[in-house]
Length: 463
Ligand SMILES: [Zn+2]
Image 1: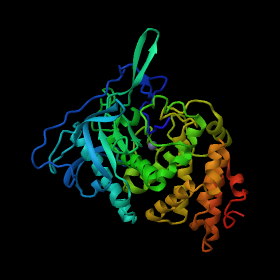
Image 2: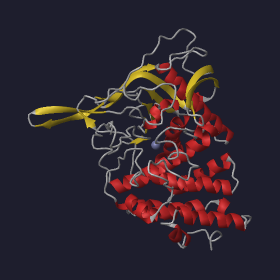
Image 3: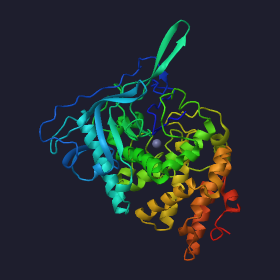
Image 4: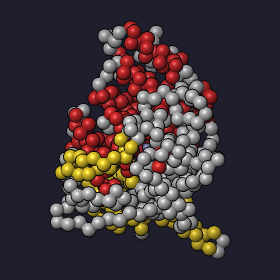
């Protein structure tokens, strides 16, 4: 119960007419139907170091063109964000604690590593974090004050989670993740502290060329090629361990400090978990959008990320005509009450999915930033202050969370947002106010009246 993994995206995108790839996270009996592919690592020579300083070859997705391209990139700042980067490690619960077998990665500048090597994945990850660090510094965030995160490249094929007696047999259970990235908020007394894991790709997933293939899930592209994905995971860390810190426990989620975690993350009350997850995923996407250089906010031909995770897109990705990012009453009701489990196939347009609902709000937020002509820095700071007010329980948002009242929770969230200085300014022109209010009505029709007529609503705005 005291353990959580925030999973960015679960990499199965099954459709009925195609072969379904079953990679739902679940306790499995040792054998993966889709074995992850393990890449080689290379012996480091004397020049190699783990400080990620110098000129490196990166191979990353170029968002607008949808191509995966080699580039030379100067990396100087990424180490401000992470303590160590591990490769070839197997991570799991061993005895009473978490343990890692593996090594810290050492890479040589200017060296061309094979694209499918652990070193290359490490360099790509560091390059993405370098962009994040540069943006944070340009936004005048003091990176020294953010706790450092550990990075695990290829951390595990499977994690042992325990055993159960079934009949006269003892079955050992493992937890499997592949083609994915997660943020894990470990207690530092238990392990090194928070970590970002980049999981291996499976054999099937890697059957791709240099060209993004829009018919495959995530375009057939492993997550370590996307700066946005690494930034998103870092955004979870930034929220959990910098903006919120120990106060995050107000949401009843504590960091891992016990190995008895077999029960989690699957038994947390669905609705409660969804509200908390909604806030986290919303923030992580917003964070990634503003810290990643503009063009990598795009995901051309990357199925499941294109449109869905592009914050400026009013449309979702859909095979069946236009579907827009609008919170209708029926979608809100699905999000609030549907008993369906929390796990959803990432491409499916269902509104139990916190990512899909978060995308609606983020679309509205980014649109308002444009209406207000906010710079990227100001946009970034605006949401930071909103999330600081959330953890201060402004407008009783945490009470609504604890009472399982999704509608009031979301109304409080929007009241906190509209309570921001920028919306209360006397200088805010009438035309902009009107635009903000009409966008609110258009994008959140299920809640706009309740927001506008609630006692907490900023009276300067829509009435
Ligand atoms: Zn996430």
